[in-house]
Each structure stands twice: as C-alpha cells, then as structure tokens.
Length: 216
Image (tube, rainbow, N blue to C red):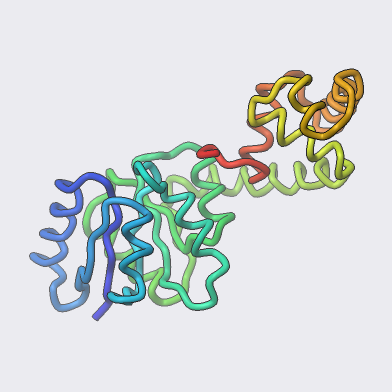
C-alpha cells in the first residue's frame, strides 16, 4: 500500500483525487493526509509519514517551490511528485532542480497519475511524456548557461541577483557599498557575459538557473 499526502489549495480538487483513488485503487494507494499549503504539509509530515507527496506549485502561504526548498536537504523525506496545472519551463526545471521526483500536469487522467505514483515510489524519475522534449531542451540550455555563470565574479553575481530582484542601480550600490557608476560597469560586464540585453532578460536568466526563485 502506497501512502500519499495530497497538497493543493483547492479543496474540491483534493477531494476529487481522493475519491477517484478510493474508487479505483483503494487496494493499492491510500491517501493518509491532505494539506492546503506547504506550511500545513510540513507540519503534518512527522505525524503521517507518507511515502509520496502530491504537491501543487501555486499555493498561498507557502508554495510548492518553497516547500521543495525546505525538503531538499532533509536526509529522510518522502518522494515528491509535482501535480500542477503549470507547464511553464521555469516551474518544471526549478522543481526538478530542487529535487522533485516527478512532474505531471493536472489535466492528466487518473490512470496516468497512478502510473506516475508507481514510478516515483519505485525510485524512478517521472516526467510526463509531452513535457520531455521541453525538459531535454532545458537541460542542454542549462548546461550552456552554467558555463556563462562560471565566468561571473562573486561581486558580479551579487549585482546580478539584486538586479533580477528589481533593485535600482543606486539601491544596489548602497547595499554593496559601491558607487552607482561601479554598479553600471558591473552590469555592462554581466550582460556581455550572460548574453542578455536588458534587466528583464537578466531576471529570466536568474529564474531559469535558480539564482532567484519566481516566488522571491
């Protein structure tokens, strides 16, 4: 029997999944707990001890990404299968980068969800088939972008992160105790090294590579 925790902020969705699993797979999968946020999920973990967490991405209070960030360094944690309506490349890649064991979108059928649960439970990595081309492309692009990141100095990384978070040059200078002109010089070098033409592209670069989270 595979013990599952459902984590999603929509009660009707949680109840629907639970009913489908109970009606068709009660001999195979048991929903041992529900949670409407990552915070609630974490507070229940020590008590219910699920084998797998079905985790939504977009939730109030504490998102799926933030929950993954907390769980990724825990030595003993349940398997995590992302069950999300979000097919954005940033969400997919960031989830897998933070240690998710699988990713499936909410318009899947119950049989496909159960197949994903089985794969993850057995220690396999699961990514929904129609997302695989996107994921493979992202892996190649990520490796290239990591090489670009390696060319940045520690100070340039600091300036890049603050820029991606929306700070103005003057504010970055104040935070790092450098002049606004020095910040501009750093930005020119950064944009050249990571091949971006403006702050928006730099912010997207940071999200793709986990320098900042889309929930920061």
